[in-house]
Image (cartoon, rainbow, N blue to C red; front, side, top):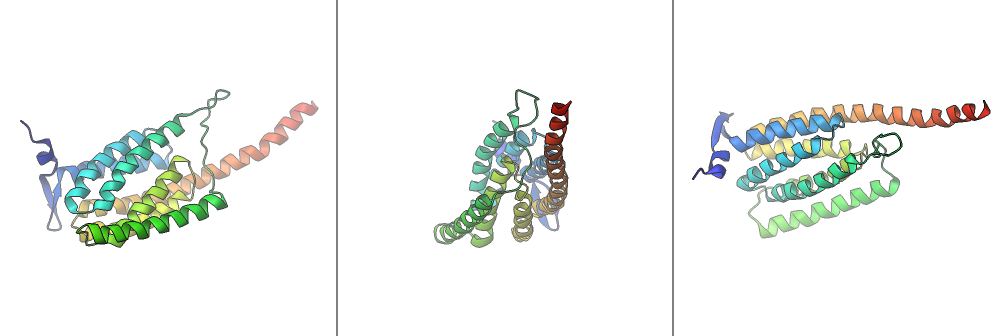
Length: 224
């Protein structure tokens, strides 16, 4: 019988003296494609993202990044939520119901507080219950990624800033674990997040401009 897991974890090539597995390559490709699709608001980013979650789940368990491994399972569940939310369309004009917007004060403060508490709790748990050598950065990536994914599903523009912070921590974290291809991937993620922030900012301005001109247009029609 073909050992699929063994094949996925087998070495494909070496990079900077470290072995790069087949599953890490799959994670690289699906991850890059997913984030690129998010920057352009393509709905198929969600199923590609789920495939990426499965790949990284296998990869992170093998690397001892347990919080990141658990994160992939949660990511997949949130991806289903985001997929459903992005699929909803208005019956009147078929436009996407979910539009790019800024976080409310309550969402911003609540999200940051929740992320801070989760980071602290996860770090303590990883330190006391696992053999993790990087509990704090691993915990931060867990909490920050959850906050960012929730914001992504609701198209809150500040989620890009959270992703940028997560990427800045993730790059050296994965490098220290010898996951060089994944570190390179997250460097690409960082660039894509900056591009996504730029694109969504333009979209937000366009949406606001359309809303501001709509009442004027309607009043003119009414006068005629």
